[in-house]
Length: 387
Image (tube, rainbow, N blue to C red; front, top):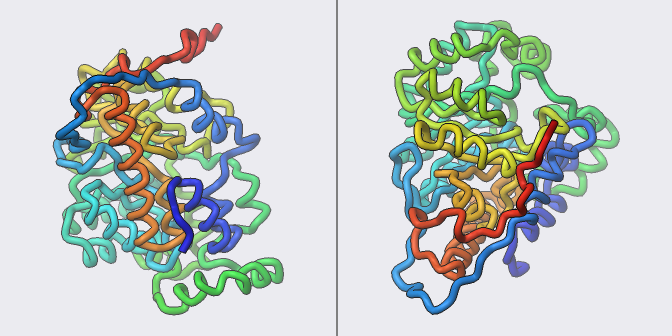
């Protein structure tokens, strides 16, 4: 077993072990991938202030996200097709998150269903909702999430229409994969993945197949999803969905101060500053660049979280120091899952936790609550001056 010290170590293992179409699905952005790249490279522009001769004992990374105790303010983000990176992937990731003490968020487009994950875990998880035109389906899936004991609804706002991801089109991405000659040649080299898939019954979208009208199998699924994202989703509909849910509501995909203010008006409990990991509007600013202005505008009125681009504990610390109360990792845990299943997700969390803890100490702080901009050196024009 190789010595794993960074998230990138897990990424390289994931690339070797998962089929190309699923690795590419995770490791890609839309169009030119400019925003996808800058989500990570913009973190590198921020430097840390080293402080010495301070008491570093009795440190803690414990915190809260939307009132829930967490071992560190890092949640697992919702990622579609997680169960195609590794057999029963959502269940394995949820179990790892539960044992570590951080939230797990299940995607609408998961392979394992809400009920599958609830059956294999004891801690309430969060459920991410894509709003579909089929109102009956939306009502039913909200009810299913309630019945499963989900403690928060994460409503994704930046995918009413799908951004074009060239790799997915070129790979002919499907779940399960269509057995074309190039796909079969690639799958033949991924025996570990294949053995896992042969041993599970979960190979399609468990939240949709058998639950949506006219979707009884995978053949009817692609046409349904292509037509179903609600192009008319607006703030009035969001307010109605909040009322239907009746619990904690997190709005994901906020990348503008005006939208953040609207989120406050509809009574959300938290917002996630996010550009969908660079997978939607290519050319948008990175999430870390937008975070300070969103925090300045609404941080005293609503809990501000952040995702897109986090690959290390230092990235987590930078986001928290800029005002985020919580962060999310998507690709970072997917690399671990694709590399080593549940053990790999745990390893990803351990790597990030260790980096966060040591970096916090070397910046002269002992807990999450005392992290502020004073531990950072931020370029003067970091957020940019745009005409």
